[in-house]
Amino acid sequence: MIVANKTTMPDTKTKLGPLVLKNPVMVAAGTFGYGGEKILRKMPINKLGAFITKTITLNPRLGNPPPRIAEVTGGIVNSIGLENPGLETFCRNYFPKIRSIKTIKIVSIGGTDEYEFTQIIKSLNRQKGIDALEVNISCPNVKKGGRCIAQDPEITRKITRVIKQNSRYPVIVKLSPNVTSITDIALAARDGGADILSLINTVTAMVVNWKKRCPELGNGTGGLSGPAIKPIALKMVWDVSRAVRIPVIGIGGIMTADDVMEFLVTGASAVQVGTLNLVTPTDVFGIIDDLPVILKNQNIKSISSVVGTLRMTY
Image (cartoon, rainbow, N blue to C red; front, side, top):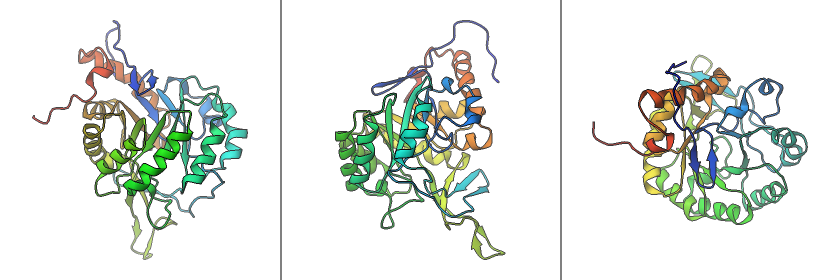
């Protein structure tokens, strides 16, 4: 842990549209469960800037066949397939436990069409204790007709508009890196009414066992995450943050507080930590502790003052 002298520490609060976070660090959907698991009860979850649930769909999903995770240099390739118990079970068995978390609470939702998203939102609108929705339109392992929603700007705009019109919560749209121009998709989501954008989701990848002449994952392909994709994520956050005038959440390979700072200066107002949680679940809290120390050592008074300050000259 980084150490600094015990004087007044900098302000770590950050603003995401209508949301104000105590610090810019969230846990990415799918990496910290639903918030009520026994192991999580022993962790200081309330320290998080925001807690994001595992993605929920209208109906239960079994997910993809195993094996589902393969380690590679610089990260992992996963093919979970949005396994989840479905909306009804989530609201009945999981969400009551989430209400006790004393930080911003964001529910991640997934679907394949307007009907599914509308039904999910109508149900969640009746729940108390939700601060925002993150719309997962970018999972590379769950596609309809060979493409995920976030690979088509027109569908992205249409789905976002339907969600925004029906939701009483702020809407975060999660974008895919597996596109020709992520800026076009970001603009479509903004035009559809998105309050916030989060990026990037995993990069489509494959792990092969050449001796067996087969993929290492049961689904064949999956999504690469971890430090290997951080440079890609930084470039896309830079592009999107300059193109839109709504807040951006950076995701991709964040393992340290310095990684967080890289995303902030590049244009993100907050970040999500994902793969690190699958390695050492408690390290995310160390990042939160380190952030004010880094700011203090650099004579920076607030997190918000560094957002978007990257200069393209050395």
